[in-house]
Length: 407
Image (cartoon, rainbow, N blue to C red; front, side, top):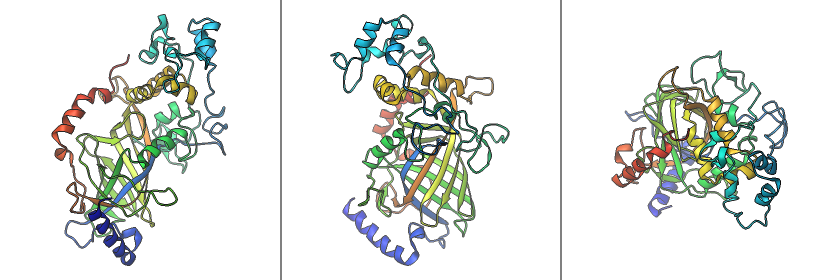
């Protein structure tokens, strides 16, 4: 952390001992503009309800047969037309074409007429990725219809989370909160400095816990997260917003007894913790709670394009992902396509988006304007401040995250 910011954090921390930890990041409510509280995200992951008692692969109410079983890869290759000898040789660790980094590239060529199933998943015969069969899910009611979807763990009806239905029994996503292998790997990257997300909550009323006009903003920061001696993300450090042309999300709503209920405003794009770096959300909502200890926890939901999810896993080396996570990648493509439940063009259009929810956990932090000299006082957009270089780079790669391409 830069020296000037460290001094600011120390001074603010001293004030916290007087004002109380939970309010240390709050701009005084006496200002005409209202109040604000600021945070840094310390963990976020897909909201995948776990219905077993313990263990990642154990049977549970979510997945009665347990985690989707590992394929017999020799049989998979033989079904694709390889002889047993060829299939066993492709899987043999002594085969010089196998790579510790990239796996076995030839694993891809098992589609019709030996086409690459990673690039052309429809050329592979679907073997079936076990879907979630339980009725409970975490998430939000995105379509405002309590008669459809799952029931939440607290009994709330109408929860829309077909991403969970499609992939919740896949080993990489399954497990108790913070315990799935996918979430751990992705959040470790964030905590080691790959990216940082800060959150600003601001309102116009006198009581932050009960305010009819509240906004929530999610922004990038160029400052790395700081970890304490126990390996946890430390509170009360200072982060400056780094404007991003695409990845910014603003929500507008209200607080009720400290619970924020809000809907997305305009173009909501978050930094995704998965293999695909962007998370655009349509019809987005959030429900977050400002805890007495200062933390901000809850859910963000919306409809996300499903094809970039598949492409992200392929880009992360399909052959390695398949073997390590016990899945055939074409089955992921088929599952996402099957359970996609939203079309941007209307009810009769192609369902290119799938309902989704993400857990968010943030700790108190000091958030500064991009200049690094002034504390953020309220939620606003910083997209216009993104540099021309960043704009050009993002525009050139926009097609990769648009959701189009594979057939």
